[in-house]
Length: 84
Image 1 (cartoon, rainbow, N blue to C red):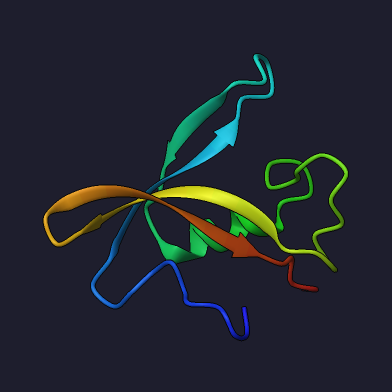
Image 2: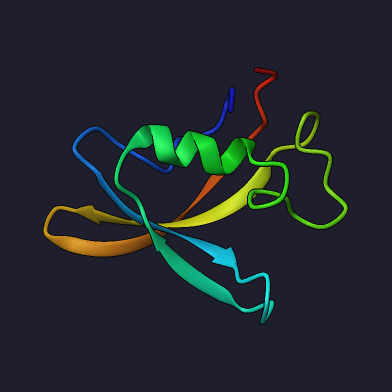
């Protein structure tokens, strides 16, 4: 988002995103195979939804796991839903 340092940098490899499991409510990792898949998760009406957040107006925070410089790190990515 404007004015903020992005959590991702060139060369980072997206590995997984943490999402709540519908059955248990606990967070689990979902492997990412492409940036397109990540966009689909952010825009999914159920999967990417966080309780009481209007993602068209307020960015939601998603924990993602990346590989950076030979280390695996957990970073928070903010995302708004796209109108498409």
